[in-house]
Length: 452
Image (cartoon, rainbow, N blue to C red; front, side, top):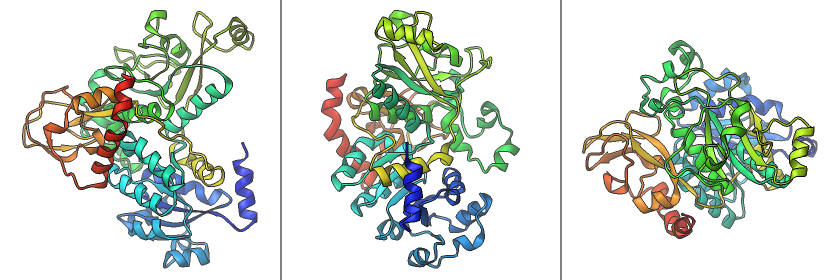
């Protein structure tokens, strides 16, 4: 609870936390908007494939042009300005950088960026949760071996859910379920970038104004991102996952403790201790009042009569039995909150969520009948969506992780709704991402099978 005072002290001592940002798109821009307002932090450099686009985003969020005129990283350190370029390796390898914020949204590139940062003894805040979803357990282990911290990004829902789970457990509550909200109907899994805005609830003009990427937003709508984020939470907290994908039970905030109980007690869970996502829409499409669409929640159990009496006495809203209570945050502010992670890893040496096991995986699943020879276009595209499955199921079926299902060719047809396997595609096997995933399978597959 004292990160701000620690940052103030670093500012007073003239020893700011020195940050390097890779990727200055929408998420990165939100973090950039907050850096000038945060004491004790210096953004030394930004690496982006398009430095001009990065500068445009800096101007969009209110940075004055002179703040980005550092001619080099060394010049940035001398002047206090920020260097903007396209050389991510120079940024990661510069000895002055304390924390690398990986914000590209490209899971293949993100794995390479994270591994190089670890080799340079840099802490990493990984915004690209897609990479964490298919090899986060091994990334966390590699960071520990290097003596640095690897962390999910606070502000994004997985880290916020992990924070709620940690709160519950630190208080002594068993966690019954935890997760996020989402606008969901079953046919959304077929959504493409062409249909996303109507279903999302924005006009194309609003999307263009905000510089919003239809493929990225479609990854939320079609269920891929909820699966990815639930995977990150399960692997960070040890919570279990549904045996055949997320259920998306519809519920208002008040009804979350009612539906997030085991089936045996009137809820939807296969058992206690699960991740799940709550839909903000009824099955017939009606909007649920006071929804949790943009928020996060955790349901805990009052195991004793005394604890349940306390729930009642302090007007905690529970299920009808009085046994299950849900704490929630109805909103999250995404990149505007990433500074919490940066401060936590740099000043406390603590992640705001990181994988500790391999409980869950996201497997690419066909949106339509796919033909041999077609190219998969990955998360949020026209060909596949991501389905949350237990890691043991993914291992047993040779599931193709969604994060590696981009720009790869199908070698045989796949029916709509069928999850893909490694044998269905012609895979590039030389990337850091592929090798890291396969190393993780070898390292964690046996424990995953035992957990099944």
